[in-house]
Amino acid sequence: MGRVQGRVESALGRLLPGRDIGPQRLHQGMRYAVLGGGKRVRPLLAFAAGEAASADPARVEVAACALECIHVYSLVHDDLPCMDDDVLRHGKPSCHIEYDEATALLVGDSLQALAFHLLAEHRVADDPATQLEMVKILASACGSRGMAGGQAIDLAAVGRTLTLPELEHLHMHKTGALIRASVALGARCSATLSSAELASLDDYAKCIGLAFQIVDDVLDCEASTATLGKTAGKDASDNKPTYVSVLGTAEARAMAEELRVQAHSALRNLKAGGTRLGELADFIVRRNF
Amino acid sequence: MGRVQGRVESALGRLLPGRDIGPQRLHQGMRYAVLGGGKRVRPLLAFAAGEAASADPARVEVAACALECIHVYSLVHDDLPCMDDDVLRHGKPSCHIEYDEATALLVGDSLQALAFHLLAEHRVADDPATQLEMVKILASACGSRGMAGGQAIDLAAVGRTLTLPELEHLHMHKTGALIRASVALGARCSATLSSAELASLDDYAKCIGLAFQIVDDVLDCEASTATLGKTAGKDASDNKPTYVSVLGTAEARAMAEELRVQAHSALRNLKAGGTRLGELADFIVRRNF
Image (cartoon, rainbow over all chains, first blue to last red; front, side, top):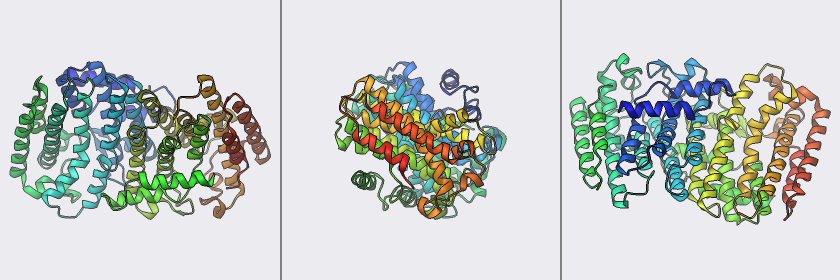
């Protein structure tokens, strides 16, 4: 995993506008937000799915960077005072603290545009039609019926008690959509997988997307700020519904474990195997940060 | 012009998620921000360029809606308290006043994603490769080296005295980039124009982009809030550099007129003529709202 993360870090450094290119403060803010932090879960998923499709890693790298740009833009906007108002991210001051709110707003906006620019500028698939499909998958995953919609559902849920299906609906959007897109994009970098295999990969992605969020909730409750690199215990203090508040820690962990098993069983339908995808499912559920 | 605006209004109403689709508050906010206001200059330009390329209006309509989504997202974010802090837009309360800041942030984010979704989902060009080029043109125009970059340059310029070239640099990004993209996208909806004709269209677009901003500055200074539908005189009270503050009103008007003439002369290189593009150049320079 460290190898993929190093590769993505270096690609992001190359694909982001340089710190000396104007407007400098904006470009420096983009680099500050993106580089040197984060688990790079979405790039790891894209690479693992790309491997299952025997895709050229040079293509997957671009798709992985686009996905990470979207993810980081969502964190930068999410940390703003009008949203979660969080001052710490990846163990350093949030973008709007290190820079200012207006710059952070534009950093997020620009990262979203950059993601689509990357997918359109570089060759990431066998043909332009597939590449266009990848643009559509990403746009759909991050828009009002995907990630941004999830944020809106989250806002509306603060202070309310959610049922388990409502909580799932929230997270299928907020984190699940981009995780599914990560697997879908990686798998489309080469046209080798059948539509049945792509559907199995999507089942896998749905399971680990949900498992990822459940584990996040458990860690937010159990781990320390130092380990997480973001403010721990914030969900509870913000009165946000979480898997822990709805199910309790033990049952939440059991649900994550069940989803891990389901994810593995979805991978059995892949002809070329999905060893690395399986390893990632294990990592996502068993991590402690 | 009214015909195109009516067509775009109705297409936007159809292409935006319905107000009853969840998350409802977000989708209602998107519709509130986009529908029922605005001069629709970018769609008008896309349709005029599409006509010069003999493109199917059904394709141009989608591209025009994508452009307008990007434009409106920029207005919604620009009106936020951390940016221009403006409470009035198109004669009604700004999105964050009618809804709230967090919703307005997500409305802007979602409209950007929707723009790319539209360009990728619908058939807007003769082949997927051209369509991918259109995605790239739009992403480039609205990113850190286009419109969002222009906002950052604008932030850095508040309270400073700019030279005329610095002011041009600012506006080539802030409004010019998306206006150029409007012409470029409309012209690519059908593969009939030569690269020389596309280059002439881009020259035209550069001229009217700048002229548009100059006239905006003059109007901000001379017209009333009621006529503009946004707070008049705000540039001066915000201590922002404008063409009026740098050149004075008379010289600013003369420069806009000169750019109008240049725009017309660029159109002479089009084989099929660009009557409507010429009319738009006249409208942009001679409007009083």
